[in-house]
Image 1 (cartoon, rainbow, N blue to C red):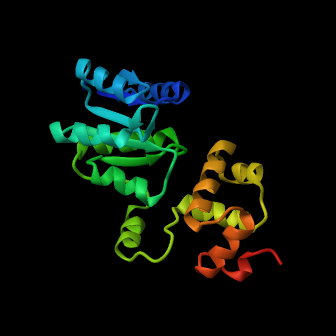
Image 2: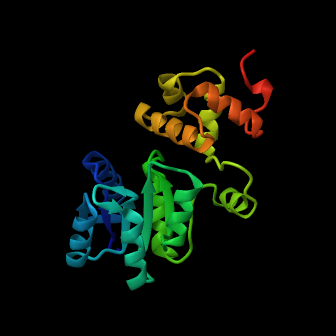
Image 3: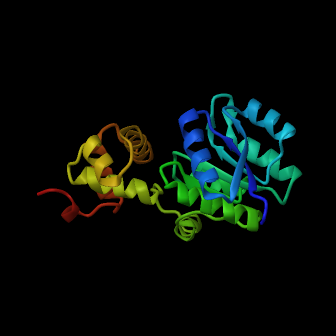
Length: 215
């Protein structure tokens, strides 16, 4: 029987680490050897307990997880590195790619997707994997206005339908805090301060059609 793949989880939310640990260990393929809630702790833990895969969040209390990704990749080309983020915009995806990650997964993705990313990271640590990577590459090569992630586009259309935060959360099966984060990021990209401004800007940019708005 093959030994399980060893994993380190880096995220400042203990509940997320616990959920991932349960999912990884229930699969029988992985063993979580270390956890960390900050960059400093992650560096310390990895020195003491190097693992085959590191799953790291981008936003950490004492810095950016992508800095840790860059450090790890500069010293180990065979290490599997999965970036986990609640932000799914192109800039975060390409930040993971450019800093040497093996895979990028949104935090609201099912645990199965995180484990699939970890499997990819072990098998092909130098080959980047992410949902909608082809579309993101196309947007990067031919930029035209604000680049919305697929989830942000979904949220925009539901806002256009007149749905509120709770309704959008229910429709997309995500938490209300995650929905608020998507809306905030959407407003930021569109330079809008509220729903009406966001919808008007989206119409001008061709991100929405008039028939998508309620009559």
